[in-house]
Image 1 (spheres, rainbow, N blue to C red):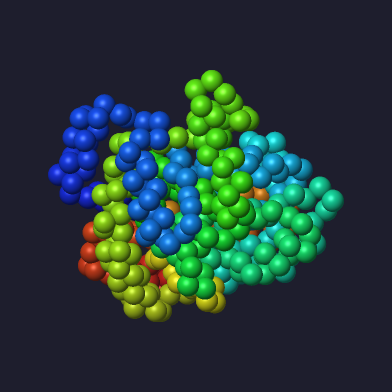
Image 2: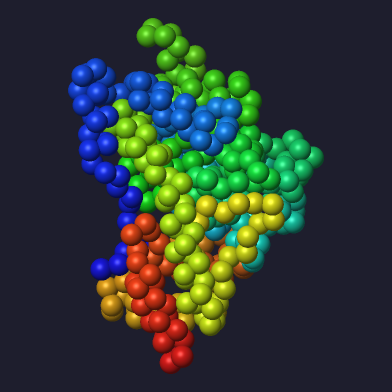
Length: 360
Ligand SMILES: *Cc1c(COP(=O)(O)O)cnc(C)c1O
């Protein structure tokens, strides 16, 4: 069986060494020493001034929306994981979908301005597959209209824009360290903010609003993460450069074997470094996609339609005119892509895809 992804697991002894320390200290959660250590090491690795480790990438988005005090309408992308949209609705705001760029599959900045109304408070965009949005163009629009910018940077560990971590951009950026992501802590996530005041608010919010045991700075939620999760992160961080390197090689192997495919890869954003988070293929038609899907499944190979469906079709949002997102969501397949996937397996997957294409 070849799944779309397999979580990276480090050598068990290295994880167990951290676990022994947890037993010695009897400190399991609530901003423990391993959580602090992970935050320090992540700052260092990513070269960002600050971040907060939280429970997951979804609570990160919800805390970001709350901490920026957003209300009314939030302009967002329909081509993302459901958590991007559901977090907006969960926080009592209305998602307004803007169509995507057909090359990068990120929100198309040239379409944002037409969607701005007096009720718009922010833009929430996803750096799709770890490929950065046109950050400069989005920031320029936000500045002109006094809007906040949140980036769902769930896929972006190791991605850079103009030589700097993608997490450094926007009023708040959020990351996911879920088991399926390139760098993971089993479950986990982070928020990044350039304004220290916003960061401070998020720090309170992550811990029920506690300002000391008997005082509360404002409304909060349980957004904390545990020592066990931080331990997984500390071990995995030692391997992350190797993880990115082996994904780069897999990606190059796919590129060679798929040079004849009727479809294309996602276009990279200028001035950016990609982290090889995913291997998406935008096929020529949905018919071809379905045939490829069935063929691969019959050989116990399980790619994933990601992202599908376009989020403007969710039952709890208003339908929108986003033809590019609708079209791309129907034709995009993420191929199996993980450390440990062999060249032979990649070759088999590609041969099957090309076979289906020939018989269409
Ligand atoms: C994974 C993901 C999330 C959610 O992160 P969790 O840690 O699973 O809560 C949000 N947005 C995008 C784009 C994602 O891929």
